[in-house]
Amino acid sequence: MGFHKLVLLAATCCAFGSGAWAQEAVSAETVVARVNGEAITLGHMLLVRESLPNEYKSLPDRQLFDGILEQLVQQTILSQKSSAPDSLQIRLTLENDRRLMRAARMIEQWSEKPISEGAIQDAYEAAYSGVDQGLEYKAAHILVETEAAALELIEKVNAGEEFAALARDFSTGPSGPGGGDLGWFGKGMMVPPFEQAVIELEVGEVSKPVKTDFGWHVILLNETRAVESPALEDVREMLVEDLRRAAVEAEMAILRSQADIKLIEDPQIDPGAVKNFELLSQ
Image (cartoon, rainbow, N blue to C red; front, side):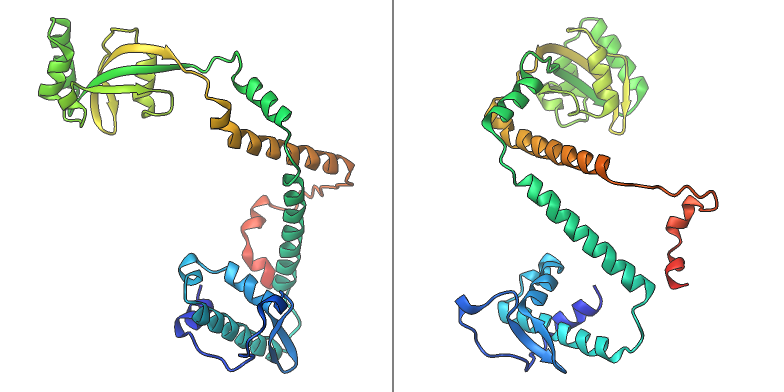
């Protein structure tokens, strides 16, 4: 942050354009200062504020206003003092920024197109109607520190001892006092080795020792059930975002197919050159 941080922390009160404006007359083109005739506008200040970390955005209005304005005044003075033409890095940065902002504006325009209820309903049915949503699992486990301890517990279970009682007596995990019960869970909710072991079990079956970062597990699968499809309203926002994304991608595909694109394949260009920032100073 550097220069921004120093200016804002100093919160220097500046003597440029401190008069009040009628709120209704203020616009992004309202001039707040002139430095050797060069205008600094409220729009310039708004863009600086948007680039600041949240900790600075929450400063009191006067402190923030004065700090940003002083920063822009200093930058304008330094910019005017520099007689050198824009460097290659400056020119390319400006080109990239302009390209990025214009592209973002196009994507925003496409994204603002309304999504019909029919399209949302169709997307919901395609994703959930008659589609197997997989299984949920109800399991219990005993967590111990060593594989040998896990094997001993499996022997006790096979000998007829109650799994829940063993979990209460031996498990080092937080579910131990509850008999090792983990409740219902679906795919992606457990660490991969644990999840894979559960998936491979039959209801009522006890696993072999399973190693995870937490230790060694002995797992009992109690029940399974089909995952119910969510209600439309519960996934509406996600579906709308997916539809908007698909619409943007479709528009982009059309424009790309219509564009005259020539990718220059030069064997002398090492792909690693994209990491050589020193090229900008040559």
